[in-house]
Length: 541
Image 1 (cartoon, one colour):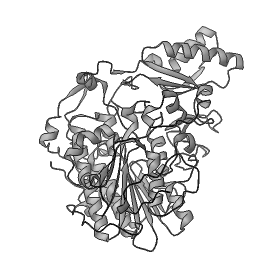
Image 2: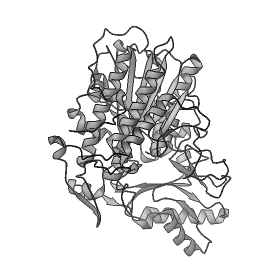
Image 3: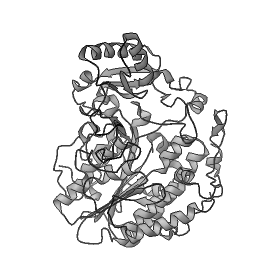
């Protein structure tokens, strides 16, 4: 495979060096490195693990949990990232979706983005000011700072919501991709490394990207799949015209830039080289953009997986050269589902795109006509949270709810529809997450002030994209395990590796890392400490 690296990002240019096997560590690590690979499903991990040779191969020599769970129902980016370093499910973090409806929002646009401050004058859910205000719980970085104020927390990601939800409310550096370069909160000074990386990225985007070479493994997955009359996916090789920012973002180049920034800040700030334990958070976002725009199969995802493996190896090589004793945890914010056009060829005849008649607007309009009520009656999408128009009287709400339930339940693409009272009355689930009922999964995504009046679950393999187009042919967000299951990997030099096939949850990551560095969990959480191995120094109490 030939991948042209970003020329000026020398930090990741060298070939990765193998980690030197060290004796089992006797003291806590000086640096925690937490990596989220957006839309890295357990299915992708299983498919490509035999092909990993570099960064992932190193992680595979540590503690491997192939059946990690984002156990809630709203398997989207913001809720998923909110679980990783809080130890809490979305019902506790308050991050119930990427967006929700708040009819009391002080603006005309009542949609609220999970990582915004909607009180900013002139803002809307698409043109917003990034904020951590909606995250209701502290993160691992905040636990660390409470125990030792000198601990430093650095969070970089391809998405603002990933950087914010993992970094939390108290960060030393927090940077995300802003469309033309990495940006942060207003008023923050830009470190020299961010300036350097942004200049390198701008230079690279200004150059054309030649098609990447296909390995035999990827060549076997290269086949064009028609999606619309003018769009097909499956045989791409990430060729890109000069100046094409959108294609840059949905390619291995993007993750290389994100990881380079993380490596650069770790090096410049000398993370882990002082008397205190520091935290480096990296949100690699390209896999999600590739999955949405091109699907989870095909040559594109194959190239993405192999390139990410290389980039992770180079990140670890940079950290190795510092001599710092560091521990790594890698997981994902959610899984993903391939486009139905290809799924149907893989013996999944039930795979389909959602019926446009299932949108809240369409159903709400029909209900309004039937009940002779001024619309819209319902607000929301085709699945997930659906809200009642606040102008409805109590009597109208009762009638609208009954009719909405009847219509949703009768639709052949709907698995279940739940009311907020049903969800609120459901106790927190116990036992392995794969055994939870749909209602229990919905309960873990429910927060009374933000969740819908109804929650709609589509049937398996129904993709909630009615009209696909460039950049958006496949997605995630369902109740089903292909969106809930993600790998969870831990590594530290000197630890004894093992694999645990039983299910665990992403909320277990933060308490496990806290135990590794001897930090007390200061709040009530949903996760538990995982007993990794005596060689890691982790003690679960």
